[in-house]
Image 1 (tube, rainbow, N blue to C red):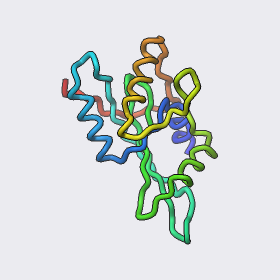
Image 2 (cartoon, rainbow, N blue to C red):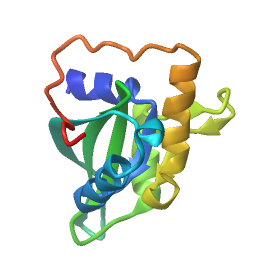
Image 3 (cartoon, one colour):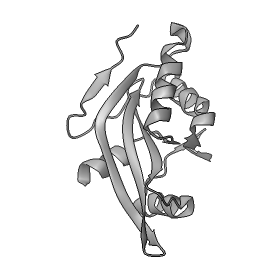
Image 4 (tube, rainbow, N blue to C red):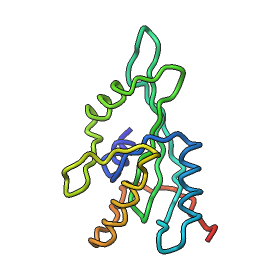
Length: 147
């Protein structure tokens, strides 16, 4: 659990997107001209948490990580037949998993439709010379070698 907490605390953005949508976003990124593309390293770590119960039924969230230009980004989605977005948001808040961006003025959360906010932030970090943070353990990745 410590490693998961560390990965979430060091994630620069939280993106609501399931694995199929993450694949679509990767495909969109990889089809961009090189000057508009970010480096994409797919993590091999994914977890599912039960964040609560509603009418005796579990409410779960699945999380997977990617490194964009070296920075950790957490992709999450409701998992199972019952999803309660308020419960998931409260779970993230309780855990302290709430990155910020835009000079710390806005929550660094988005969905697939607005993924460009995440890309913009990662590109701004590079322009500002902000180095990706290291983890205290090895993060196994699959690097996109399609280009």
